[in-house]
Image (cartoon, rainbow, N blue to C red; front, top):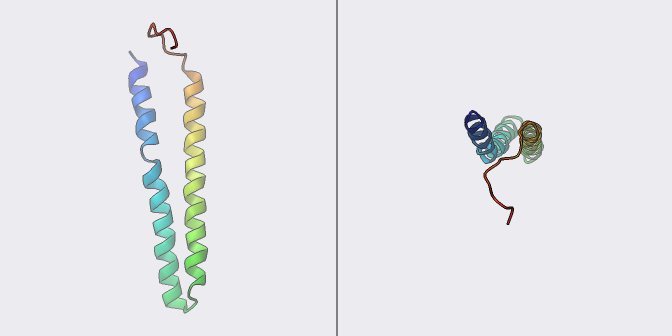
Amino acid sequence: MAKAPQRFNKYLRLSTVGLELGLAVLIGLFVGNYLDGYLGTEPWMLLLFLGFGAAAGFRRLYQLLKDVSRNSNDEPPAENGASGR
């Protein structure tokens, strides 16, 4: 039963994936939009920082999935008596 909190923690971490990816893109969007207005370089800063935000979001997604995958390989398979059907 000690594995249940660990498994629950893994699912909680996975549930934040969409939020983290979306926030990274939105932050890039807002920073790029602000810099375009300040520097008068429309739409180049917006596109550049939107790309940075997307790259940061996908990098975080990759790190999270790699970490969860590494931790799930440490756990032995569940023995619940199922015949595998």
